[in-house]
Structures are given as C-alpha cells and as structure tokens.
Length: 105
Length: 429
Image (cartoon, rainbow over all chains, first blue to last red):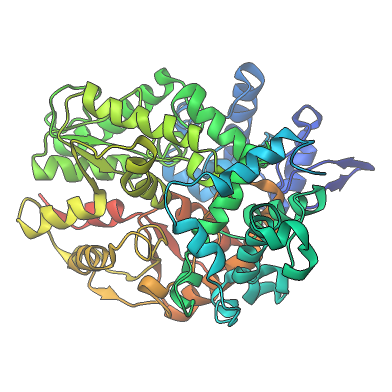
C-alpha cells in the first residue's frame, strides 16, 4: 500500500499498509488510515479499541490479545468485528499505527 | 560470481546435488514446455506475463542445475540455457518463487506429464534459504515460532487468559462440565490451533470445544505447543521446519495422547502429516487426523447430533489447496458440510481444481507482495460472487484471513467461517 500524505507530512507504510514508524502515529492520522478501510468516522467505541491497542503497544511492544481489547473497552467480540470489518489485526491495529503482527494476518 | 568464491552459493548448489532419491532430477528435467500450466496459475491469469508461468519457475531452478551439475552446462552454458547463480538470478528467484507462487499445486493437475512444480519451487526456496535470502517478513514468522513456541509470539499467560475466557462463555451456555482442558496428560486427543485464533479470533476455539463437549471427547490443549502452523515449510529452511515439527511430536509424547487432531490450517496439516515424517525420518507412533476427519467420524458414528436446518443461510466452500487438492479431503469436507447446512452451492471450479485464495505459500506474512496478493485474489472474489452464497466456509485460518481481505476489497458482503463454527451452530445438544 502507498505511503500516506497527511497535513503536509509523508508517513511510510509497509506493503500491507502498516506503519513503518509507529512512533509517528497521531489521532488525526488514525482517522486518515480508517478512511482507507471505509470507516468514515471514528466513534467513541472505535477510540476505546484504538486507545487500548496503542497503550498495550507502547507498554509491551506488541499488539494486545483481542481478550485484552474486550476487557479494556467493555465491548463484545461481535462489536469489535463490526466496528473494524477487517478484524482486530488488519483493521484495528493498522488504524492504531502498529507494525504488522506476525503470522497469518 | 562462482560457487567457489561464494560459500553460500555452494550451499545452494549442494541442495541440487545432495538428494536422497531421484525425484528432484526427474522433476527438474521432465518439463516438455507444452504451456498447459500457463492458465492454471493465478499469477499468470492475473498479470499475463511470461515470468509467472509455472513452467518458467521450474526452468529457473533447472537452468541453475544445468549450469553447475551437467557437463554441457559447465562447458557451454549458453547452448543449454544454463544460468549462473548470480545476484540477478537470486533477485529473480526471490520474486518469482516467494513472491509469485502460493505453492497451491493447481498447475500440477494441469501439467501434461505431472511435474511436481511446487516441489521444484520449494527446492528453489531451499536454495534461497541456504543463502540467507528468505524474505525477512516470512523469516520473522519462523523465528517467532522457534523462539516462543507460536508464530505470533503470544506469551503463555495471555494464551491461558484467552482460553479461560472462552471456557467461561462455554460454561455460561452449557454448564460447568463444558471445559477447555489445558496440559492434561493421558487424554485421547491433543488438539491444535492457528495462533491467530487465540490472538484475534477465538470463537473458533469455543466452537471446537463445544463440539468436543457434545461428543464426550477426551481431549486437551497444550499451553507449550498448540501452534499447528509450520512456516519452515514455506521458507524452505528444513532444519527449522524439522525443529518446529519435532516440538509437536514431542508434545504428543509428553502429554501421552493417542491422537493429534490438526486444527483448521491447510499448510500446517500438510507440514505435520505429510512432510514431518520426512523431516524427522520417522513414522508417528500416534494417530494424526485433521479436525475435518474427526468431525466426519463424530457425525457418522452418531457421537454428535447435527441439524442442518439450524444453519439457514446459503453456503459455499472454499477448498484450501493443502486440505483438498494436496490433502485428499474432498469427500470428508463435503460430507461434513452437507450434514450441517441445507442450502449449499459449489464454486466453479471446485474441489481439486479449485483456485487458491491467493494467500497461500506464506504470502500473507510477506507484506512486500500485498498488492500482488490482493490482485490475484480477484479470481477467488469473482468465484465467490458468482455463487450468490452468503457464507463461505473454509477449514483453514490462513484462507480465512485472505478471504476476509478480498471480501472487503471486492465488496463481496459475505461472511467467512471456519468449519468448526458452522458445525457448532448446527449441534443438537
């Protein structure tokens, strides 16, 4: 996927559209990435998920289990899959500016 | 560059010369250039460039064989189109053997003489692995499996937490006897998972647990070795593929289980069932079946009761290449599916002629080929759209991920489900 130009700055993405420099992530950029996935507005529930993923990543350096996302956001699994149709990895973690998780995602 | 001056290149040539049987030589030298493989391949069909023709991929490897292992190739390379294993060739090999082949094997079925093209492609990958040329993105997945015991690097306490969560949900529905046992010795079945299940999509674990509960099965998961995948099969590093497979065999022995049930993963099933005995040079002293065959047995023997009218939507199957074409489980998959859904439609083509989803061969791990992978996935998207189905069943979590992406990319508006989920929804308890 192409790099993203946002507010005069170019953000580098890997082939799957995950950020190569996660430390450059901003909330404004998240909204921009989400638009690529057809999510035109990030709601309060989207943000609960994104903040949890971001905090977990900054603390532990990896994407959280979906279990942790459910606990922290108070949302049900089904709601998470509906809010991010590409799933917690390709959907939510990408919008949260994480590098691509390893494995079959 | 000559093999003498670059030890790594010599290691690659050694793979072509030090083989234990005649299979490699036969398949390297058998292509008659008839061209029938062309239109069997996702990549050629999508891009219409000659470098994507399966026979061309075979020729890349055999031209190196001719250059270093035949008299004519050594003395007059141009006469036999023999190629130097130089940087240009290596770059081309990485692009075509890793980046433009899912090792799906559809070309083999269309080959006029049955050349095992993915076997030759994997030989090329082994050569690249010997030279340290495996794409870093794919290697990272192998490294995670070797270092942490699962390809996503999930810490054990996180895994246990997720399993306990699924168990709580199960017990809310079915009562306290419905459990997900961990590390229990002496059970009949050791069940395995794709790590993306506990990490991001755990409902398929609960579905399998519900089925085992309904069947009254004696089973357990291991917290140390539950990962059914083996990306060493895709990377071409046989030492690493062997180490991963050995860990699973050792776990079956440690927990004293009789049957290893392979979770819904195409390449993982293949790597453990059909490749591991070659890696480990031993026959397993336990039974090994896929979840599909286990479900077939449960339904046929009446250990679980299912009602197909409970699944009311229109379903189709995406046949994972390593389960159906290369795994021989067409009948089992159709039997189970037809017992649990009432409105079913096949794709065209289907079964052993089915097209790969585009995510096989380690493609999902290799971000650099994302754009190519989504483009070749259009063939599958068109197949799905033509069925008019609302739900696509596929017994492979790798396929699930690719199908989820093409579902979104090509706006198919379908649901993607694993077989366990559809069977669990049809259970009569």
